[in-house]
Length: 176
Image 1 (cartoon, rainbow, N blue to C red):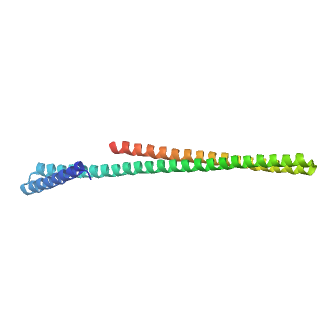
Image 2 (image 1 turned 90 degrees about the vertical axis):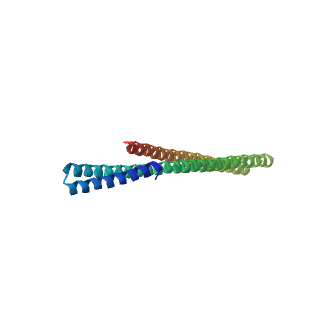
């Protein structure tokens, strides 16, 4: 509780006690206007107490929403970074596989030239095709991982923006 709220709470308590004293004094002396004034003062004190409580709740909600927004933003950044790292790994693996496939195809082609056999040509073609398909699959997997990471990142950023809008709404409600 801040000093202002504590001060307002003390003031409300004092007003409530003063109102009660006026009400009792008015009842004892038979002055109805003093009784009414005391009751009004007590009602004002109750209203002030409720307003202070509502303000404290609104501030707590604002803080919670801001904390949630910061946490979701941090998590989104971490997930985005992890997804990019995974996509980079897939891409590197695809590049390595492609280089290995090209080297294997070159070796096979040299063997085919040296041996001059049709069977060697067929094996080289099959191997090159298989390796090319594997490389394309790895490249496709890398693209899918990157797209998935971007979609997840966008989703988390949208959630963070929604939390920020909710925090702003709570701040606006609290200031009303």
